[in-house]
Length: 331
Image 1 (cartoon, rainbow, N blue to C red):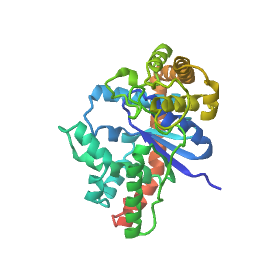
Image 2 (cartoon, one colour):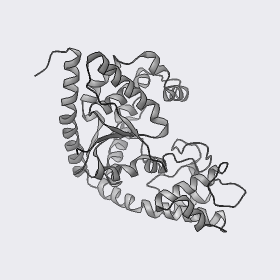
Image 3 (tube, rainbow, N blue to C red):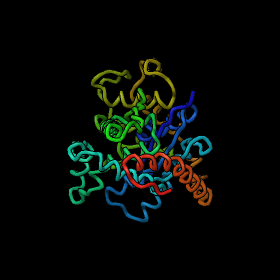
């Protein structure tokens, strides 16, 4: 039986957080064995908010190298930079014309970003979900690994695909979400009811996957917990629940095993153990990233090859979509 196809993208916003890694990128490596995988640095999405051009150029390449360092094998998967593949923008326009204004206006992320950037509520920010749909549908992806906060966008992509199919005949695959049961959402170390984010004003709230070992351990030592001094997973223990989830993911131990391991031990011992486990888990990533970053020629060859493969694949789909709408074929 043919393998199903997975598409996923990540924004080039600098170094990934531990939340990005656990919730998404860490699993992309494993998915390569079971699925046909297409991965992308979605730099076109990133410019819906203002970027400093030189810094932006740097973070795009960093993000590409980080994905490889996290285990994406370019011999098994297609890995490319979104703006290098023109079919994403072409299909985006087709899909925008099959997306309702009301649908886009209900997107939670548009509302949130509009509030955070009131001086730049641009059209790209509004139509962002249509471009996300184009990213996915250009490859007729079966599955899309998404965080909990991206489910709304994927549902819209399904609605757009369904509307297109109803108008022009069955063509697009309706993508399904691929969500990990454990570690799908990593919370802030300082406000564990909020998602971990590098934009947090408190530097101790967020772990970056390129943080050195001392920094990682120091941040975990300062993590907010509670006054019960009992390592167990239950409602109302947001800080400990978050730390247990992180520890479970990086060690491969289930939550019950974590509870037994730290029975009778204080939070100080537990937080130190979590910090050391995370730092040790990320050490190979830091080492491989340093090696890749030092070889710019190799990186360029990789992302050029990846873009060529992605274009060949997506061009077939997008050309057929244009034909269905009634455009005159170019060839």
